[in-house]
Image (cartoon, rainbow, N blue to C red; front, side, top):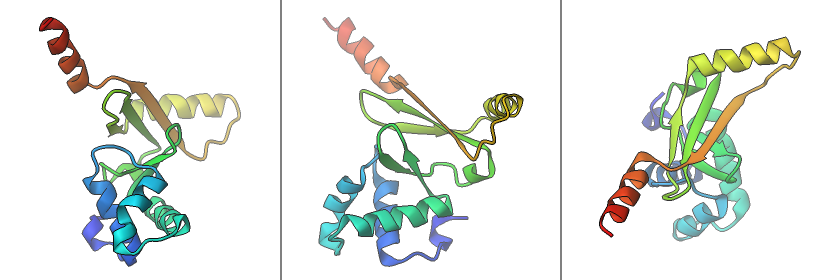
Length: 141
């Protein structure tokens, strides 16, 4: 479902639009700070909007960062596993879904009698752009 087709409240639309335009994951308080001029005044307003957007599958929560990102793949909620490669240099979070990884994790869960509700993987490291920038900088010395 395209985000334009969603029936959202004003606050939900503001939060989603901000996350869609952001280059990096945002905390709820960062969202609040940027949307105060639009009438959001309390953290609860942001958290309610985020809860609804997560429920609709258009926003993801990055557990390790306690931050939020707009969904980059509208059909990701139809797969069992969503992952994020998080650059520790620039802060960007690249979303991915991989059915092979999902099958391996599901197999492990079944073999160990674990009933998985959801699976999210977060890989931290350095993205290709930041690696290239670092190589260029070290080559210039």
